[in-house]
Length: 105
Image 1 (cartoon, rainbow, N blue to C red):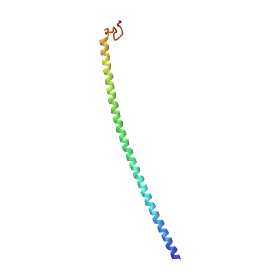
Image 2 (image 1 turned 90 degrees about the horizontal axis):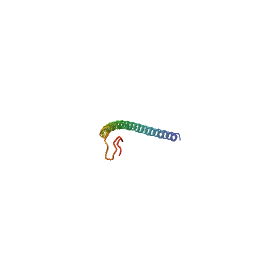
Image 3 (image 1 turned 120 degrees about the horizontal axis):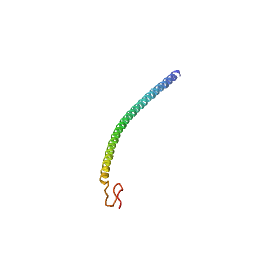
Image 4 (image 1 turned 45 degrees about the vertical axis):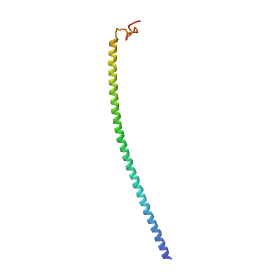
């Protein structure tokens, strides 16, 4: 009877040891998977940050370009307005009014 109990105890201890080893291996695999996922997330965040920085640079260039175009348009409009006012001063148009409102019909 002692022999059967001894074999049974050895079988149970062996099963527990094998089960613990499998659980440890699975836990290690899961930890490795989590670490790999964390590394991938960090890489993705870095790539996103770089893309945002590049996009910000592109936006800044576009804003600068638009600002320069607007400034040129404003300057051109001022020159045209000055030119029109110089041509109009003191002269009455066909409808009897000058640009400065001095002519009367």
